[in-house]
Image (cartoon, rainbow, N blue to C red):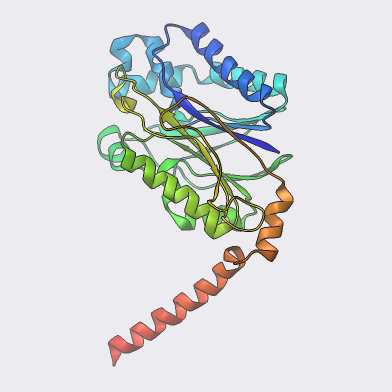
Length: 298
């Protein structure tokens, strides 16, 4: 299987036709490279907010509503592209609402047969929670697809080991990590988190960020990152854990090939066995906690 992660710039698109042309061109380039799975970034859907005009895009609340206004058309376009090129696509995440007072941050997974499902971000950053009032999602979903068992951790979610572990214990072998980070420090946190999740679960993490300036929308006005695909630095994988990576802040696809048997082999025969030793860690932790409590009582 060939994986592709987008380092994706946000553009002030003048109309729907421009958005359709841009997304189609990106998918075409991924398909021409032989990709079976394309991963777009967090909040990439906010470039749709400019379809309502500069004033709408510049307003934190109005930009959410404008992006959501195009949800059905976005879904139809992704379904058409996934079917046309016979591949899977994690669409750029954006605001969505299901009879709830506030929008969630949702990424939708598409396959050649249409919508497979969606994942909402679980843990909000301070900006999302305190200034933007984005609601947290209500649980994680594991996707068993023809190209592999997939879990999705949107940006900040990748920094929490137990979220990834829940997906892996449900069977996930590939973790998709769409992100949008303003500063190098934010990008580094997500990058380190994604690499750590790949290491400790002996799986693959696909990191797709937004890149470049978008001063017309204050929610995503500055974007720093590089797209990459990570694996455990062990048997069958790169010694650095980096399978592919774009240049910093440079739009394009990071592409890597993956034999799913390699994941099973490293989990069974690796120099270390992080995946199975997770349970050993849990036992040691319980023992340590019991010891500390006993020492405190003494």
